[in-house]
Length: 243
Image 1 (spheres, rainbow, N blue to C red):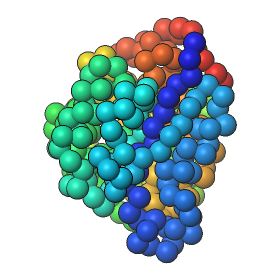
Image 2: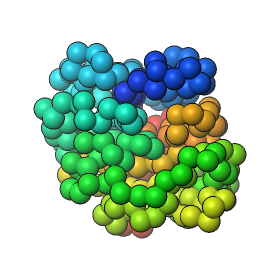
Image 3: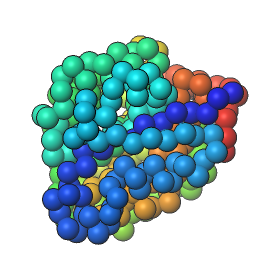
């Protein structure tokens, strides 16, 4: 079976505008994630950023992508609507999509979920987060303990205006007492969509080994050619490629 072809997409704005963020991710958040995924022999990785022609998401790139990873924050409104529609069409045709952190406000996430998803509580005080695993049998949670602990992170709290997930893998708890649905799985057409909350740019979240492990697991789950057949709380293992 062929490798999973992954494209890691990033706005790549914070890293250019904020020296602190640049010190954490000198080559960009996209390269931090891609560098980890490249360790998986079953995965082929490329990157794309907002300021490239067609945002780096040409017809050729999308046709050669099994799973698209999306990180955005500052410039959701700059993403062209025609590119969003092309990505949406690919997801409906079977491409996997992993939306990270502030990507909850992206056009593609809202377009696929059918609602505005920017409504939530937030506080950027660098609080401890415990990301509790509530579906230990799910492929995205493979290799994890009871929870992932992140020493400092931006708080997101409910109410999070999203449709009820087909499957909820993680719930976050923060020092301030808030909770948040942090690992949400959906099916849209033939494609799988996973929203994963951790990832504020001013903290080294994408250097955390368990956070990166979740993203790698999600690549296998979301790929049309590998992972597991999962539907409404039931998991049916099928042939899996790689780790």
